[in-house]
Figure 1 (spheres, rainbow, N blue to C red):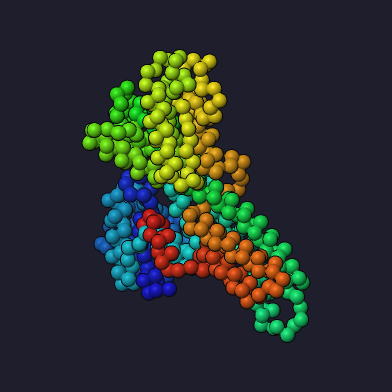
Figure 2: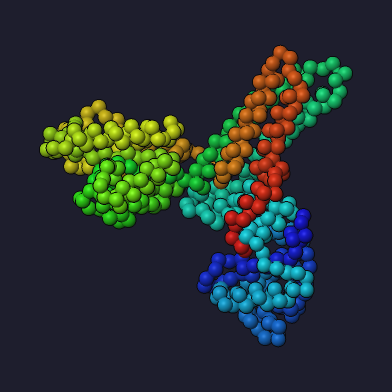
Length: 471
């Protein structure tokens, strides 16, 4: 490790602000001087001691619990000293300053973001997926996300990765041993059932990837943009989905001039809903800016809800006496063409017809398969929620899901590509064992990146820099 990573560190381990209890945490190789200065005595390891925390003159700054953990029996694997005091910001800052003062001789410094967790990883207390799960558990916005992060933190994800890695490593060793001893007249591909083992690995990998995709969805959610012509009810739909009056609603076309975003939960899945300005040509400069921003949001969407006004549909115009139905239908067709041109084929566009409460049941768009709802009454909203989860790829029956990130999905995809290439080589009539061994090596490295057994310092820096200071 770098010398800086060996420095003793200190930080507040609780959130800033007022609270009942606040924690100051230290980690290093020898904290006895700091413990003596703050507590006026040495502490029995792994026991809570109620005492006064002293300043440089021996006066009490506060009274609370002091805990001492000796290496390697601590979160970081180093010696750890914690002060559990009253949660006032002034008190905690005084305690932190006193710790830094008392530890100046041993080079005690303020911790960087995520440095406690990084030391736990570097000292072998947790692997990289468990370290990431700490941040994911703190940031979890739903119960399902918290439970999934808890599974990752307990090592469920890591355990499956390690089993697959062991199988891949064992096969690689066997193939490379055959390369080292070519005089042995043994058909390694046949005797070791290489193709069968690779096929089994692919099946296991697919199961892991499926759980990881579900976990990534719990963590990241899905961005849904509501688009359509003015007065289709986009803002009303946002309010209905959120269950709150977030967006201003009026019968005046062009009321929404800028995007309004809100994160909602649908069965534990975060859905980031964006209401946009009505899509139309306008001479109003401000409205033009709103339309441009609407298209920008659409370009970055995971799914688009294309909202139509059922009362202006040609199929029901006669029943509600709409006079602009043909023009409305033409404008809708132009928007649909623009969506098809701008969006990738993988981005779903969900056609939704609003204001079903204003149309006679006998005239409800015969033959249409699109979702019909009323943002005003809530009729049909559950169908839309189901459809959003469907396009997001969520499986309601998924069990044992663990939290995952985009980097995990990319790594798993690379592993799958290498194993498939290895299977193709192993199935050839004259299999080149050197190429087969190389594919197994690349797959092994990609898989080891997930838990941090193989990776770069840049990757570690990026991951831990997103943590809070006290973690």
